[in-house]
Image (cartoon, rainbow, N blue to C red; front, side, top):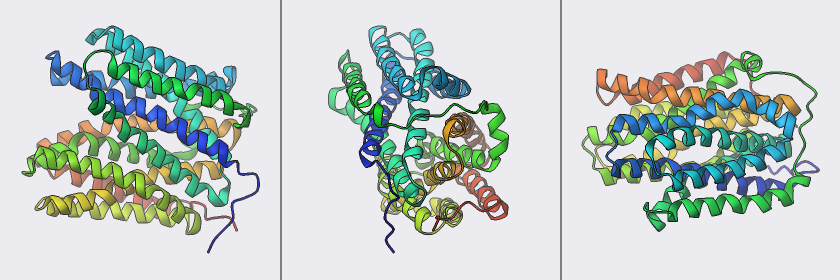
Length: 387
């Protein structure tokens, strides 16, 4: 059954938001491996490298409650513009002063700048989408985000990690977004600031959606950080596990549109339940897949898309329920929960892996998504596609 998009859908503006979120994700995807490589060359300890990497999610977490107020003062478009300029400036500072102690505050502020871009972009894409095509549009949004994250490390492969070249390349990419943003700002929806609702006040009003976001963030960070460790512990080589991460990102890019399509033409609730079951099945199959690299790659292709796909469903539902200032505040609340899930997931999983062995990883994710599946069954129904 084919449903035509609702009247007034501005696909040109939607395409621009896709491009913008991809460019910003490139910058973030570039920073994580580059800083780690440079600190490794400076003989910085692994624990300090991990602590330095935590500065960006900490910046995301602590700045999220401030984003709605900043958007109210500046306007969503100018907030995104200033955030992009700050992102370029901070990357320039990091390149000019390649010093560990400079990078601690710089990476914290990178999280703040990136947050302004993500919250405004997620708000715009939900305002531009209509109920009947929101799933597909948000699915492509998530895919664009994944493409950016995947391209970030490729910059290092192309230009290396030494000197100014990698920093200058990413600065150029970020600055490319500015004329695109300026030209499109008149077509981007304005946020009506008629409500005075803080992020802290909002979170208790949508507890189930907040839990979905935290679960997706935990899955994302656990798999990126600890899945390679899991594979090595199970006897697989570094090349196999590096390929597995790449395949997982590829699956996420390819399958998000299909997840959004299912949410539109089936229902949000049923799609979420199916994704939870797929993640749980992947947890059960993960130890069995380590007998052959091909089995592992096939598994993670679908497993990663399902685990991240629950966040796509949460974004879709957010657009169904909220608009205006409430939508912007809700997206900022999502950033808070993403920070909490991303910061807590790897340490808890690492502890379980120390306690129970490598399979502590699939045990924790199976339990987490089992709880999410159960809550989805008893929670008020997520909306179906409006007829």
